[in-house]
Amino acid sequence: NVFRLSLSLYIYIERRNSALHSQMSLSGKTVLVTGAAGYIGSHTCLQLLKEECKVIAYDNLDNSSFESLERVKRLSGGKGNLMTSIEGDILDGEKLDAVFEANEIFAVIHFAGLKAVGESVSKPLRYYENNINGTVVLLKSMVKAKCKSIIFSSSATVYGEPKTVPCTEEFETSALNPYGKTKLFIEHILTDQHASDNEWNCLILRYFNPVGAHPSGEIGEDPKGIPNNLMPFVQQVAVGRRPELSVFGTDYDTKDGTGRRDYIHVVDLADGHVAALKKIAKENGKCGRIVVNLGTGKSTSVLELVGAFEKAAGKKIPMKMVARRPGDAAEVYAKTDLAYEILGWRAEKTIEECCVDQWNWASKNPYGYSGKED
Image (cartoon, rainbow, N blue to C red; front, side, top):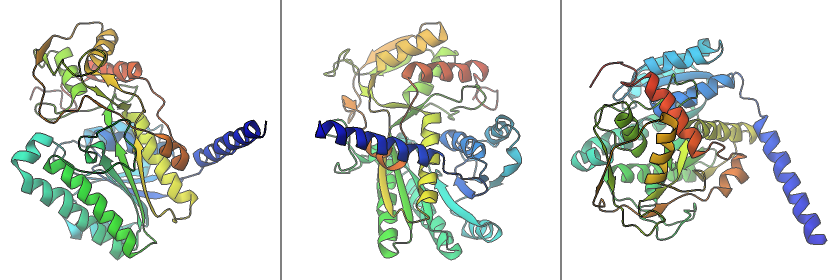
């Protein structure tokens, strides 16, 4: 009876804290979002506008377009005037300094960075220059402006090839390619910055496999060239842009022999960034350094995902079974308890919802924002 009472009390307190956290107001706070026009950035900007934040959307448009942000404004329910779009590079310290001087920025959400694993192997210096040096330039501007709160878009790639699952935040980190190394090194930079000045709030969000799109079908993932990830490749096969999907490996020790990953809906992911921002506000800028996984805590196989997409789209996806890729693990998924405990956040959407929303976006925008073939 004592145990049950203690457990009930614990659950009550956790639910109350989560409810209070979700009610924390961000209205009027100015947030600088780097890489704002990209896939996750644009969805996060929309969620920030819904919270009545003033959003400074900063992007060099290397792999994106401001069309995504124009659509965000239209989806915002009349709050588009709260967002200002700036074309700029995180390597441009003077432009960043000017942005900080002109605005009282509450926090930075840092998405900007190159992210193609294959390209990072062939062009490592470009990735180190852009991702790492760009982050250092951004942090220097923040230091000058006395803005000491940053939410960093990290990745499950920092876990390398995990020996067991689910992945917890305490796992040993490693990186298998230059892209992953940039994510990991930026984590180290933020850790060292906080150690040098404990007034800094460095929230590091390690997320797994973002998929899906806004339910409206107006914004979604629009990669240039050949997609690096499974879902946008499936999407392009479905709309006729690619002839078939290559399934890498069918002999893994999994239920159907294909690799299993933790796929998280991009809107859930965007809400995770909003929850991190609310954490900073709730703690009055005294969060310190926090590292959390953002995932669903469940894994889905390649064939299961394709099956769910086929059901959503009402058509078959042609597939070709090929050999495994070097370094691909059989199964990777997140342990997400810490995100709920610290941020009051958990993923809500199912893989079926992810596929319905992805197809809605793809069918309305088969060639992305440009509407033209590559």
